[in-house]
Image (cartoon, rainbow, N blue to C red; front, side, top):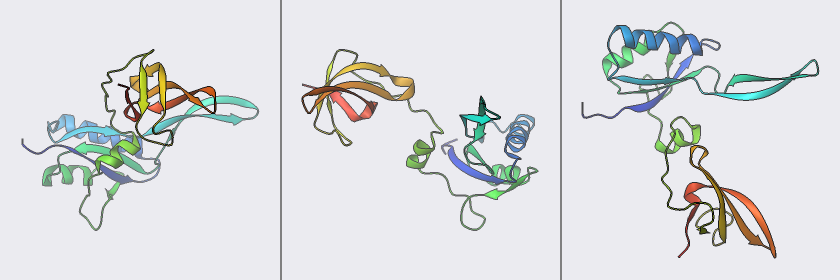
Length: 173
């Protein structure tokens, strides 16, 4: 298939997100639609709730009422998802689903992008974007899975440790 899968947002009844995701997975499995519907996500985040003076970590939905699906849009895939119990429709004008842009996908953190870096702890790097653009510093640590690099830069005569995104620094010549 020449078409590539894109991310779409499905609107569901509130509280039905996980049921809808499970139902889509089941239908994909039963009807052999793996090549059309690749991935189903209900974005969540871990937050600490304080209740009755007790702290506990809970998983909360980032977008209640929405499920994100990576799929190739065809009449079949559209029909399958549209007819899942709890789905009210796709997000988009009228009845036409609109895929998320690359920028939206990255902003939502739906897809993890693995960045290859050519620097490591101890290397001198230059900041190429953001508020510290132009500063030069020394890499303290690199966390590729979190897309972060810790760099010590000299500001106002003091060494300051800053966390930047991996693509904000390049190896200094």
